[in-house]
Figure 1 (cartoon, each protein chain N blue to C red):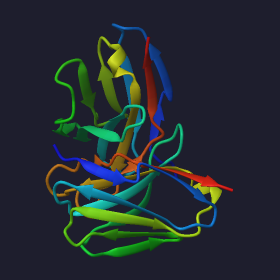
Figure 2: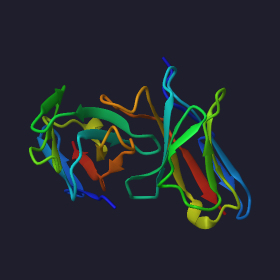
Figure 3: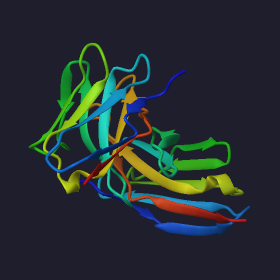
Figure 4: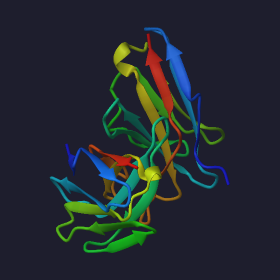
Length: 115
Length: 112
């Protein structure tokens, strides 16, 4: 009974490199959400995806950030040319449906550190 | 954008005491969720509320969906050391965008 899986758990990158974060939702869940958490703060929504579609990316920075959820395989959050301000914990959540009941289950997160 | 304020920001209580925390919003939600987060982990769902005025329990936890739909409350009875963590409320309006709006968090520490 696997929950949401994220990898890697910790990622260190130098400024200018690319970061690639992976999320495998709960089996049978087709809705994936990415959130970012800065130290001592709550989680902030970034993007909502269904299989092969981006539904809502209103929380994504306009540049350098992209997300996908292909037909096969995990959802990927990609950050190009990372900067120090990208250092944060990135969480993925999944749900079986966006309608009521909508209970989003979270993964353990990927902690990105940019040197 | 929408903002959820939680109070208190942090609490230091004795084991066995009851705990109350609340969450207020500048706008309405049609679903309220309460999560607990421990260091280095993702949030874990504790309770979900779907109707204004609804009162729901999960063991020693009880949460209420405020009548105005702009607030929610979480109570923990007879606290134990493993209740330590950060409690987040989150509001959701399903049917449109399904993004959660999280509160600022209440950090709970329990003294033995």
